[in-house]
Amino acid sequence: MSRISRSRSRWLVLGVLSATMLMTVLDGSIVTVAMPAIQRDLGFAPAELSWTVNAYLIAYGGLLLLAGRLGDLIARRAVFLAGNAVFAAASLLAGAATGPGMLIGARFLQGVGSAMASAVVLGILVTTFTDAGERAKAIGVFSFTGAAGASLGQVLGGVLTDTLGWNYIFLVNVPIGVVTIALAVRVLPAERGLGLSAGADAVGALLVTAGLMLGIYAVVEIGAVQSERYGLRSLWFGAVSLVLLAAFLVRQATARTPLMPLRILRSRAVAGANLVQVLTLGAMFAFQVMVALFMQQVLRYGALGTGLAMLPAALSIAGVSLFVSPRLSTRFGARAVLLGGLVLLIGAMAWLTRVPADARYVTDLLPVMVLIMGGGLVLPALTALGMSGARSDDAGLVSGFFNTTQQVGMAVGVALLSTLAASRTEGLLAGGASEAVALTGGYRLAFTVSLVLLVSAFVAAYVVLRRPRAGAEQAVELQPERV
Image (cartoon, rainbow, N blue to C red; front, side, top):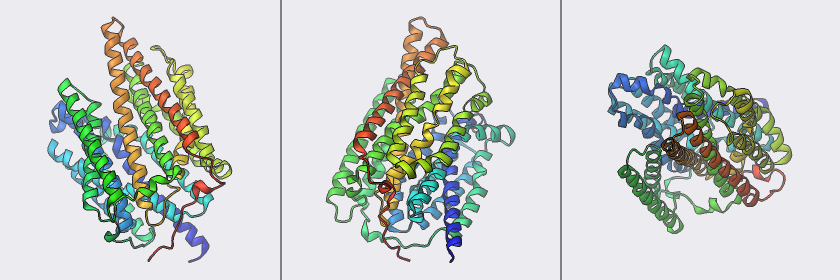
């Protein structure tokens, strides 16, 4: 194969991986705007409706680490293909759902398929793009895809629900999944895994999967606590989750063939990037939710108006991640780019802490949407650093671990900040404040806590992520592939 053909093949691989990432991110948010229609058509009880989201999140977040390691043991290509097939089949089942139980079960299966596919994508990416400059560009495109999916999800969900019906937010995944699988079979590199004997730790797999699922369940329930009894139950589930995850770490330190060799955590770049990611995405995903709610509940924007108001944020992140971040990372290194991006995000959140109840878009919100371009620097830099310690025999595991901390950060951030905002709002209402002022006070508290999280992320990045040698943060310790 000529150099041009090999180069073209690599970019086709990136296209396949990005399409899968786009579907995964879209599916996490697209369902939210269709929930009223789903409740009306399928007869969901109010307490059941949130499980159309929670069932997906629990399966997705709980299986990422296991799926990533299975990619190393079996073959990342095989796990990727199987994940896309499960996701497409589950989407067809969800679109044909005739009752709550059927839809919730299909959403759980969608989460399983998404976990299998997305857990290995970064592992495939870093072993495909071995040149530092090309990898920076590829990571920029990949990060843009994730950011675009998060921004487009609610808008696309509203358009499909209004024009074709809620079923099509799921059915649209089927042809996309089929095309993705067909392309993946042709362009993804064939490989052999290490074999299950290299890490078939059944006890460890059970501990980490149960621990993550229980932990995510506790977090998503905390965000929707309806009584003291449910709040106490969430805390119990959270405690059990921590015990199971601690037992998993002990098991990995003593098992002959551990599921997750703890050596991956010895890399300062990997450990530091995942820590910074939890703090950053905890703040930024909550920002996306809270700003949208502020514009709708306080400023009385409609769904379309809210989407258009947030469009500058999506465009700024897209432009920076695609065209600016790769060049800066190649010249200055991922750590410097990460710190610069965090400074911009800190500025955006600091601006929001003073937002008034009668906010004007041009002066109070538009500057935030511009400063949020820092996300286009932060996300690619975190990905490069988080995958920098990966080897060809554990790239799937490192990818799964990176995606797991991403999901945990987003889930914890939304649960924590939405709970704090609701509590503050209730207190202000009890003190006689108007609804708009009370809601604004709650959101400003959430933005203040987000600011603290971002400052903590900056400190962690500065202290933990030592300045590496030029290009070292992008170097993947590759070993010859076995084919």
